Length: 487
Ligand SMILES: NC(=O)c1ccc[n+]([C@@H]2O[C@H](COP(=O)([O-])OP(=O)(O)OC[C@H]3O[C@@H](n4cnc5c(N)ncnc54)[C@H](O)[C@@H]3O)[C@@H](O)[C@H]2O)c1
Image (cartoon, rainbow, N blue to C red; front, side):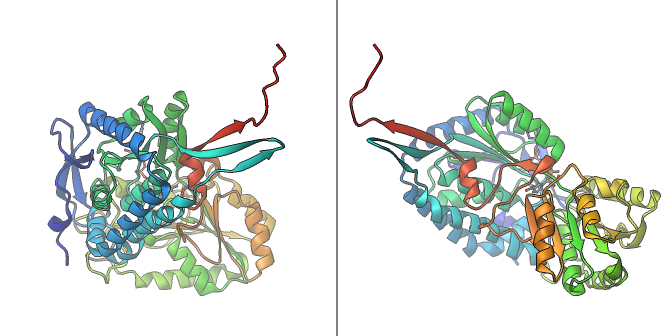
């Protein structure tokens, strides 16, 4: 097994192509969720670090914008190859950073980051404008970079989030300054190292550490053209407002409380599988999770029974052991939040079918919880928990479940399980969500746009859609004849 110390970065920040330390910044402990032990320390960025990150990004971006998109793409593709080659070591680090089991991180984190670099590396050369004929005259459009972009990450997918933001930004000719979540500061530094090794010029991908105030300083900096945040709705509202003051571009990937609708005619095993993937993967710490599971009356009992049985297959143990399939919560704070919601669910009258118990060992462990008999007004039905807590709701007909599914301020994802494909498409057409799944849940391939509606976000990540959010259009009118003026 790769040791943490083989993969661990050597300083807090990565700026202008090299590691950078400034011990004047507040200390941030990196705690391994499986043991509760401090495994590393980084310092929050000082004003000096932020200034260096901005200056180098600005300088490097001006040159990068002149590089042909094909050459930019080649560097991203090379970085993707390096990431794939080092997948095991990067996955070990991701597991130390987040506590997610190696069984997951080997297939879902560095690999997804590589997918994004490869995808945007591949389409970079195809980022062209249009020719617009206007009779004798004509016009053309040019897709230009925005400038210096800031990425701010959540703690659940630190490698993936860094690359989902950096890959389209760099392909379009921007620089990116990435601030990881203070809970998981390690992985993005490795991404920075690899991008440099792949040939990315210094200053184009800088990583600075810190909490909210560092994110806020970057967001409001006059030299920053765009902010892409992955985080909660309350943080999103603040960052969106701060960016608006400077009329900056934004992408907001925020929280959810997504519905997963299971009709009577669904395959029960597939529906249970979808509910497991949509609630317990990454110990439930996924924004798009389908935590409100609406099950039609005829299948409900069977569904709950099979779900409880299949949860006996949970293997909690050392996350670095590939046999472990369920890890701890990321932090003591997140564990407390989840325990609070479980207590609230019981208090408000929901029936805890299984799980929800704190495990008596070091680290932040809790067993996956299933609540039955949940009603739409309960706190666990309305607020994002961001942990392994699945709520089952009973419904009888299609119109009713659509109305109940949409009765939320969020709109990130939604899923439908049914063998009737006309119904599946009819229902999906009425669901207020940015990403929908039919007979599946939580797939996030880079080829498909990802993002939310309503309070769940603004803009889209991944796919060609992301290009729109990391570039701006210039229109050029070309007159071929004489200029006729009134005087
Ligand atoms: N839609 C998505 O793609 C997606 C993906 C993963 C997580 N999430 C959401 O993220 C949340 C969990 O992550 P979290 O607890 O790290 O979220 P959070 O909102 O607490 O923090 C997100 C990031 O914002 C930074 N931040 C905090 N205050 C800031 C401010 N005023 N200005 C600038 N930056 C600031 C934090 O330091 C962190 O890096 C959940 O709500 C989850 O649904 C969304």
